[in-house]
Image (cartoon, rainbow, N blue to C red):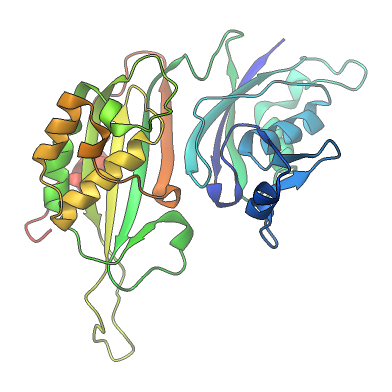
Length: 319
């Protein structure tokens, strides 16, 4: 039976993360999912709440297309509220339409992509469908992955993209953040940069690059072409590595943000890495600013940042 590799993007705002999950229908749990117009789950007859997750929504759409049970495996278990531009998933189904099931190979991969997308909600889309080896494992086969955390720094909070950035009401020193970020590059024990319930056998990971850049902003002046407040900054933190622990990128972002505010000495990063003491690092920033950018498979891992990121991360004289 053929196996397919899906690359997808999604807006994580109205999802309870990637992985399928259920909760007991307690009053507290029911209150958490009760979002008008965008419920985060549904109450089932057995007295459990079936949470709205990307894996569940995508698996349902694929099942409707191939008309047979499938098991959808995702590469990265993104948390609730985290977005993705390059999540990877895989499934296997029959190749021929036997008794109304499967996906005939002569229909083509793009037709399969379009068929799945036609059954998905607006906040998740399959970008590509590719053939995969029968033993392709999107988790174990990954050699590197990258995330971006975006911060809108300034008193004038964002409106149109508020779901995709963390709004910080103060200015940040992007150059200091970038310099501090280089301390994270290389192989380290990142126990001091993960949650206590990380659930991994080892906390050693390799960071290939970690770059902080201040991105150009659109004109922020008023109708009279005068700026009413200091212009906001758009700060991006791009980090790629062999893999990441639970909340690791959000803790890295929180640590660098504190450096940018001048409230955390960059030497604390060295201390956190040396002692694995979580209290030495910064806070865990909220999920909305985080996006899974890409996941690489096969060959050597991506150890150098792409040229576009490398150019953007070079601090400007006034940045």
